[in-house]
Image (cartoon, rainbow, N blue to C red; front, side, top):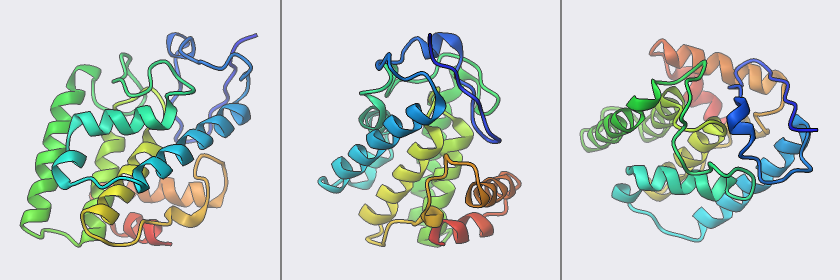
Length: 198
């Protein structure tokens, strides 16, 4: 039967070759995929809470890939690997490594020079990760989890609430989140920082 997916506003389509990487053949619909992926995210969250990471570890491509793998390794063969296709969002696939390095360097600079508040640094980091879009799927969830790790382990502040709802589900919170992301795309991070703590 295969995996049939419907997409809501802001979701990145998974191409046919990427769908072939699905490890659970009984998943055929979006709601089932979302449930399994949410379990993976919760497992990665638990994994990250049991470990201590320093700034140099977090700001590395190895960590970015490892975190994604921890989130989705039971669902997708390509978990923890850079996307090999173009998407409706994100940099060109051959620019992912370069853009990640720029992001890591920028984040170090923001921290060292106290350019933004700690919350804004973590939210900007999350947003840029989404803009780069290193993976075929799970970029938003990955970017929020890595921001939580950054804010809690580097700045010793509470993790973000991100609206206290599953943002993959259509509804008012997702619309508010997407609106805040689009404002951040224009350089205005106020709404996204507020939403992260809502």
